[in-house]
Length: 404
Image (cartoon, rainbow, N blue to C red; front, side, top):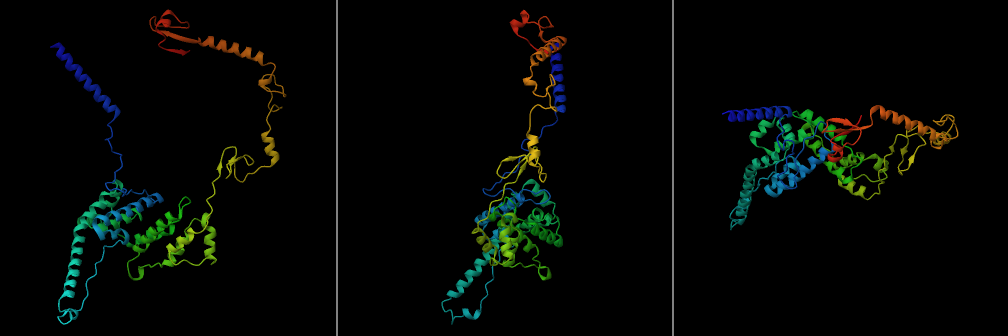
């Protein structure tokens, strides 16, 4: 009985220790908690959520998501993919015909009438198919959103209505509002203001190529025009020539400053579209962006990579040649004498009294070492500290040694 009780007590003590250890360490984070959501469609990235101001990286993630979704939906579900390009569902025009053209006198065999019926039947099938695939496309868009993006979309005021209708086009409008315009409510004025500000702030980055900027520019222009497409006095229409002028003015001035000036001075003909401006700019020889100077503490590195100390490493504080030469002078002097004998013609390494000083310093080191006992070893068999290697130390080795 005593053995059983002792065993139970030991098990209870072990559980208690394990519980305390678990409380001290804290609960572990679930595996894969911070792991990002993986895309279930090849070639279509997960749409990430921008934090605060939409950056260029967030715009490129949105562009890759938009283009990938358009290609995938077009390959699998057909014409409904136009919601990613025009923000509208495809429109199937109704057949307009004159019944007098399909009489027995003009169509004795009824071939024209049969062709007309076939076109009408085909249009009705497309409309029915469009309504059937809307919930599927809605689910695909929703699955390709990251956790943060989905949370932002769900915070929109219209999400509950859109989720009940399973409307993919309205869901796509919410994604644009929350990820490119940072708008979480259905406010037309706020959305227009944000779209206009985003378009005006769109500029070519220093590291960006012309083709990449053209893609970003067309995205911002499309969002700007579609947001203001409300009809009446609020509608804004930007012609192709005006869009081309915007495109040229938003280029990097360090690389395309001369080209922009030539356009203003009418040296070049005004382009009729963004594509025409893009093709012309590709024919020009644009100088590469100059390397940024890297400044150090005691000097700076210029564009050729050569280090200069003429200005002491500070821009706009250039010194004279005499000051530079005086800074470069090194050697014993009255200001920097020998630390052993005090002479002005040599330093410590060339001092004739260095040997005497070494003997003094060595004796001081020995005294200090004797004061603190030198290196001592612990004899675990005799359980005391020793400055010599005893027989136990030679046989088993030291378990621990330190300077005391």
